[in-house]
Length: 559
Image (cartoon, rainbow, N blue to C red):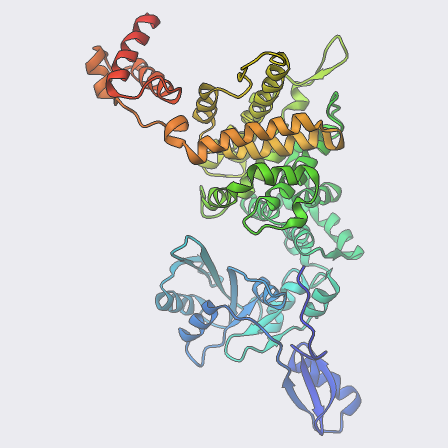
């Protein structure tokens, strides 16, 4: 976590002076005044604010330009917290007294943002500003929850989110000492009822602790456990949104372990509980639940090593270092892949981690002990695809997200199978000159991406993390290199030769196929087109004439 910059011990605080000497301080003018009155009640005090260095994003200046000079407005919560930590935030929460909807609409018109009323009765609106590069800023405006700014802040969740910045003066109001808790890296509740008032804050607490490496104080942890039962009375959409922020943040596996210990998972994702204690035969070194969390941990580490923001420390370990050697050339491609979105509310990065969490979800129902004592889970990937789709529907994910999750879980064994076949063929080919049959064929590559589509990239990455978690420190070097060879080959074709082996351009459309082969509209038309496309991917068909000849022969053989 970024450290707060060294500065005056009073920076960002309100101080009380007597004869130019600081005699007291506080998070608000009132706190500084009251503190001074305890020792200097007969003397006249001067209350001033001690500035703290803040890097204000240009968007805040645009908001201020659109704001009437006499309209109070405060930036509140996470965006202020992130500024104090030197981070950039794209989710901005504003609080103000009075008609927040009118102010929000005025600002939307001035800065060219889309306006959405969220709650007309409580006075809440959202502005969404989409930039040319596809990134977006979300600005939420709401009337104070209480009569004053301080009442609003005291009604929030955690002290680090109960800090406000006056948009006009850039003065900070911190009545609960949130900045001090930032420095101490402690997560503290704003009030004893904060979690009971809104149990979804339990998920938020885990997310904040994981993202900022904060310590959850013992009393806060006890209150969290007590509040978990109230999750059932909150909306599934709010639970989902907070959970996906956990998956999109830092240390998702650690966060999942914390949610398990707090008793959240049975209340939220009940089927995950069945993974605990499900034994697996070698080469697995863990039960299914521990393996799942290890897969998420390896996935996070691996994606960090493959990020455009290359961190050598993430690749210092042997296995990640070899990933960088084999797949590092695709850093920007991976970034572009995860930069796409199926919905504006969630990222493909978070969706991949959700798939990782559910990739073995059907093992408990597919567990079978064979006569030789080995435990097998035949068909768990197919059943798992249905189970993750069912959970995704309950969470009200989009149809595109459901389809992506289903494809990832159903396909997560395919790269393993290719790598093992390649190793077997290499062993069989030892001593045989000219044997090159060990690489997956063009047909295999084409069919992999035909079935998985864009999810193929996600499956490749998940497969690597899954293999690491299966073996941990016992992973054979030869198997790891084989899996990476397959991953490299698949990605080469997907990123560098898509029109050659992944998505060949159709040489004949449906009308042409029906006319050429005297077919009526039926599934056979699509089957012919698909057979021709596969022939193109294999390098057997290059022209329209080739396609017509192939189609004629294929139909004759099918009949």
